[in-house]
Image (cartoon, rainbow, N blue to C red):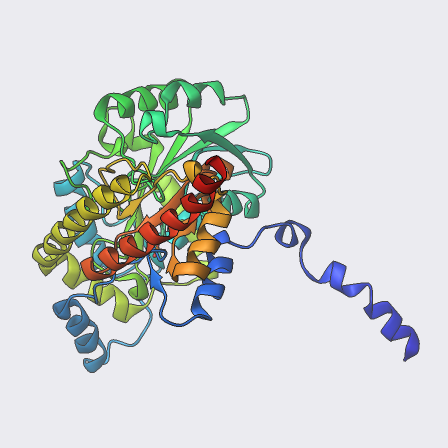
Length: 405
Ligand code: PMP
């Protein structure tokens, strides 16, 4: 017995797979554990709509259950949903996919991303992506035993990825290029010329492009094209999208991938063994979102646009320089002039003024000097948060001024 106990001591090292033990926990989650333990915090931290899912979509979920639609769907997802998805992607993004074999319904874009990376990446293959970026990318790549290769983006380029910087990172091991525009956390978008240059690089170097378009409806000046629609790109692109952001359906957990049949088939294999299918109720709700959700989606987008304008002006007026992002629902103001690191800025702001923002470093090392503020929050909350940030910044400046005198 004693011997067994001794042996057990070794187990903690062995219990968790090495590559999983080595993964960092998401910087956002750590921070929000702290936020959720505090009262009366104004949060500009969470990356999800403050709107409730539109009523007709919720009702469709209720009807689905009421009608007793409680069994599995096809592994690829309901054909009716795949048909709606392909119709939507053709009309709004200009790319035609076949619902029968070029589209798979997933549990959020999160699962689509996981399937795409696992289906494409051999151990040691390099996946190029841009930072600051969504917290999952590096870990998703590592979980597939791929090698994450970062291309940094910067404020001087409005956080768009420089095509030449991508080219410089290409090696014989490069296999995948992962893009996310409009971008979380910067709100950056790509223009057509930048996209064409990236497409050319992908074609010349035989890269497969994964494009995470989860924020694509939330663009404020003009609707953008998908890289998948450029000549020669459809056959080498996986187009990932979902319902979480534009339709305010984060809890419904529906996403999808469209792409070449061989890649969708490979993703389907992983999906059928790991997930089987996405929730039937949620899929029926998603059908309703695509059939009758456009007006409400556009109303929400207009609201985000108003809030974007308020927060951008507010932060700039406070001396926290902030670009006016063309998409998503985040701003990424620079905070270096406060003399604080991103992490200190966010934790002091939380402790002193009870306003939650996310340190830019949660999205990659080059996010240092910035914080992410989400404006998927009521105008009233945004205005209150701005008042409190003003007090916070003033209090930081005050001791420094005294020193100077
Ligand atoms: N990609 C990006 C860029 C995101 O910001 C998020 C969610 N914050 C996701 C994917 C995952 O979204 P979903 O809810 O569809 O899984």
